[in-house]
Length: 305
Image 1 (cartoon, helix red, strand yellow):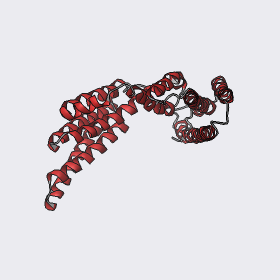
Image 2 (image 1 turned 180 degrees about the vertical axis):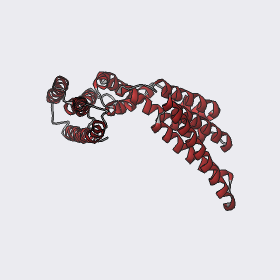
Image 3 (image 1 turned 45 degrees about the vertical axis):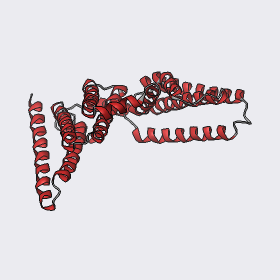
Image 4 (image 1 turned 90 degrees about the horizontal axis):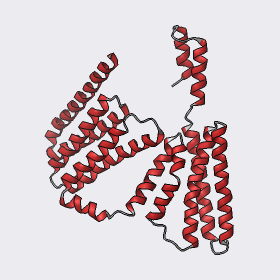
């Protein structure tokens, strides 16, 4: 949003004083979220660390363990020092970059230990990496770091889980397993509905991703396409209604998109003849129009309260 232009309009309509305008602009500039600049910095740090890992791997026999350890310690202390300066001086880019760099250095340090002591880089080390870097995730004010942290944590947890049991449940009872998993991730979406912290927002994002993933995996295990379509459409419809009722526009649009895609696939399954495809598409269009109209009505009533 153009803060300057918008506040100029408010001032001209006597909705805001000049002092309030300056305060708002100052606040927005201070709390600016530099996603593009931060992403570019993170990319540079990630490539730098990849180069570092590649160099160590190439000359691992020639570099003594003590030199590797001292080099890692110096870089890690530099990362912690950057975090401290970023927090004290309110330098957002420096703080977030240093947090990400320290996050990577923890992983590199564990990799060095695994190399020195000939340990396999297993799920246990991933879980240890996630555990040691959890405090960094909590300090971050951007969701990017926690979005990267969750796959690390889940990968570490899965190292202790027998995935064949989950696959067995999907094969033996695909309908029940899909419904239970969908309810679980749907519950996470509901619990993190009003969360504003980057960490809990990341939980919601991953819950949404896994919610849709669960429906897709569940459908693959259900032979009856009508049953699989009914389950998916029911859950997506419920999610769309929940998002509309709570004015979650992004989630509503995403659920509506998946609903439209699922209706198109169902139409192709039901109407094998070309003459009937038009009827199916008309039906899909009406469902989307009714859903969007319902959302607009609910949103309008909520704004009147």
